Amino acid sequence: MSTLRPALLTDHYELTMVSAALRDGTADRRCAFEVFSRRLPAGRRYGVVAGTGRLIDLIRDFRFDEAEVDFLRRTGVVDDAGARWLADYRFTGDIDGYAEGELFFPGSPILTVTGGFAECVVLETLVLSVLNHDCAVAAAAARMVTAARGRALIEMGSRRAHEEAAVAAARAAYLAGFRFTSNLAAGQRYGIPTAGTAAHAFTLLHDDEKTAFASQVATLGKDTTLLVDTYDISQGIRNAIEVAGPELRAVRIDSGDLAVIAQQSRELLDSLGATETKIIVSGDLDEYAIASLAAEPVDMYGAGTAVVTGSGAPTAGLVYKLVEVEGRPVVKRSEHKATIGGRKVAVRRHKPTGTATEEVIVPQGVPDRKPNDRMLQRSFVVDGEPVSLPSLDESREHLRECLISIPWEGLKLSGGDPAVPVTVVPAS
Image 1 (spheres, one colour):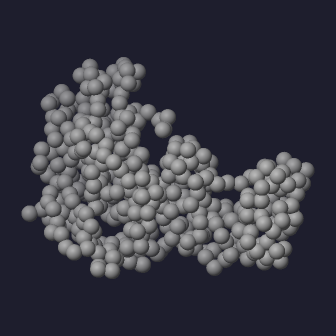
Image 2 (cartoon, rainbow, N blue to C red):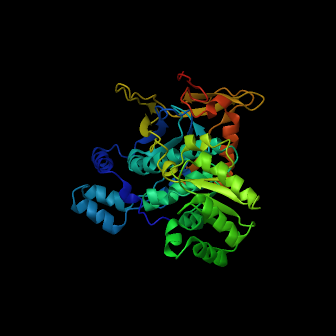
């Protein structure tokens, strides 16, 4: 599991509220907080729920140890009453939400945290840190999977992210449909298939390219990938096939005009009898670059920086807002940041063919069920105890089915309306 201590992800202002609520007697008021986005990032037509499994694990382990409580008391973040409360902290409420791999749209109540005010508000930063990151990566990765049109993708962005974020990003990308990751920690922690090849440094280490290739093949066999663009790509391919033979599994190209080079490389490989040798391309690929290569003889894409940074949208724009106190709806009326009071329930409506047509959100009630409706929320934590969650592979399949269900316009990479319209039914 992560080496990160989740408790000190808490923000200073959250503990300010806890201390004040403990003093004035409101800390245990039964509240409901909802996570949602007011809008999707520019150019996006859907969001992807990701990170819920990670989040529930972190909440299960969310405790303040003696040293942390001492630090918070010594620095004046909390008073004595607050310190005693933190020392005994354990989340005892309920958490419900959209499944991992579910699509979401503006206003979708993707997570609801219910319990005493203090025990819920202290989780805000943790919840948003996990979900804003993982949802952003998953949405970018899903767009890349769509652009790849069935060709495999490998996530290889660890060097462009914080060490813990890199593992989380690999998980989110796999959830979205990437086939492999180069991050071995993600492979160990989440069972994600790993893949990778040598870098240019290995070729430069040796006296010449053939010697480097021969060493790699001698160690790993012909079922490996040789990086052929350290010097001259055409000669690199010739050297690779001369050393490994036409049974070489793949070559990787990491630079240049990939559309032109892929075509030329395929022709050269075929002329050398390596008709089954695959071509893998990488090098600052995002969904648009991948889409531009759709007609080229590329077999696999390696995506790094773009996927782990959300491809231009590094946060999903999610917020965590109080919507109910002791069964009473509460609303924020700030300009451009108004909220809709009351805990909400959501369904997604579909045609008999399975195409999604609408998401209906009902505050404080249960929507009238129609044929082909699908309820979107499910329980994750009940009375502080996590319930059984789908596996990562099951969530991955769920997202695949969700993407199939939205109208084809919703899969476009160009900007436009959300793939599924959202209707909020006023509370009666």
